[in-house]
Each structure stands twice: as C-alpha cells, then as structure tokens.
Length: 356
Image (cartoon, rainbow, N blue to C red):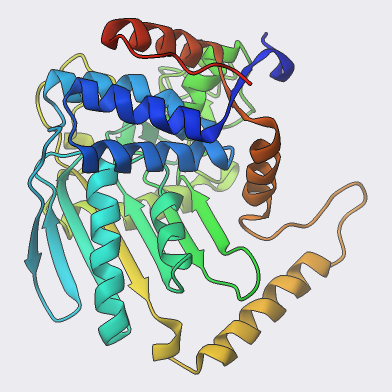
C-alpha cells in the first residue's frame, strides 16, 4: 500500500497549466480546456481526489477519440422567463455546466430563480464545482447529473442508476459557503479506481460483487451500493430524483441507456444529462435576514455537543480545511495519476509538473 507521505505533491497552478496544455494538445479549445481544468482542480483542491486531476487521462482519451467534442457549439433553448435547456453539442460536461450555471445566475439576478437542463453533455466531474460557483457569487446553487449505470437498487443485483450526484452551495456572509456534494451511491466509482491504485480496501457496505454481495476488494467490484446501507432504498430514491431532473426533464439518456464511461467505445457521444439551478436569496426575503439566519444556523451547528471522541462539522468544513492544507503543502496525486502524467507529457511533448 502506498502511504500518503510517498504521494507526489504539486502546486495547484502547475497542475492547472499541465491540464490545460494536455487538453489543448488533445484537441480542446481554450474554453473547454479551462473549464475542464477548473472542475478537476476543484476536486483536487477540496480532497475529492476521485474527481480531481486523476481524470485528466480519461478526458484526453475521450476528446482525442471523438466521444467528446473539443470545440463544441453550445445552444441554449429558452423556455419560460427563467428557464432554458442547453444542448451541449457533445462537449465536455464542465464546459456545459459552468456555462449553464452562468446562465442560471443571470436569470436569478432578474427573476430570483434560474434553471437550466442540459443534454448532449458528458462527465462533468464533481457536482460541487458548479454549486460553489453560484455560492461564491451570492446565489444558492444546485447541480445534478446522471451517469451510466453502476449502482444497484436496494436489494438489487444488477446495475441500474448512475452515481447521480447532488450538490448545493449556499453563501454565508464573512465565511466560506455551506457546501454539500454527495453521490447517491455509497461512494463514487472513481473512488473505487482510486482505492485500486492505492491497493487499499474499501469500507464495508459501499460496493458489491457480480451477484450483489458486499465486497471490500476494489478489484472485485461489479456495482456500487446505493447510499444508506440497510436503508439503501433512500439512496436509490434520491438517485431517481437526479435521474428525473437530469435525463427525463433534459431530454438526455437515462442512466441504463448511457454507454459506459470506461469504454471501450471512445468515439460515440453518450448524451449525459445534467441540471443546474440558481436562487437569489434577496428575492425571497431581505438579504440581511437570510445572511443572519445562515450564520446562526452554521455557528449553532458547529457548537453543538459532540459524541465522545467525535467532532461536529457543517457541510463543506472538511473540504475547506483540506483546501487550506493543500495550499500550504501541495496537492497529492496517486501513483496511477503520476504514471498518466508521465505518458501525457511524453505523448504531447509537454513539461511534466515537478513535485514540490
């Protein structure tokens, strides 16, 4: 097993520059390369390493292969005043989701709420990146996305839903945003791949083998368990909520109709769906009242009595603590990602980021 101390660590700006350069070399335009790098660095900065720069090799593969268009044409179809559908033109999911959230925030500034359903998109990384983008500008942001089937139903023994994440970001005056980012599976599949790279066993009740039995061996995983363990019907139902917003409402493919993310076909677009929403708190009540309520809510939550040996954190606290630590000590990359960097640097004749 690799120890955390043995992992390479890099400055964020060096990783961003390498990601942008590699994506551009694979055929991405600047807006796509910048958006994808921004989303990946969100994951790496906040400790969501399964959705961080380890995705670079995959993103290069799908752009070079043609599954994801490196130079997409985004087409917004306006519906009601505050609502639109975005045809992402088979572009990168981050390119579409950031553009959709910008559109939603523009509408929310006018009408108090804005929402965009996205079709003909692709994997967009960590959903929290888009919710946080809204919260940092004073809006409440929500982001959903479906994906290819990899999660069994409660009591099921076959893949049905994708990991179908839910994210929500909320501004808090004079503090970091409140930030929720969760898969509706017990864990995301990219975490299984990360544990394989680290030769590390999985927690119990998060993944299943080919017949639906719990397994802790990342190499034996055939499907993920829904969030909730013995109460996994709740996670499966939440995945359905995401499916309705991201696929049924957007005109995208349902999870069980989406081609596998891992190939072998890297040429055919997958029509992944997503949904983003922005709300302006001041449209509902005075901004000062909302700000005071959020401050009191989170302060009281953090100060609540903890169980012996435990600590209490608000959503986002762990992530912002990790980000602070990584600003000082660098962002770690796992061995498989380090090897991928070597290959990409050689393939595109790029300077390989140097560890700090």
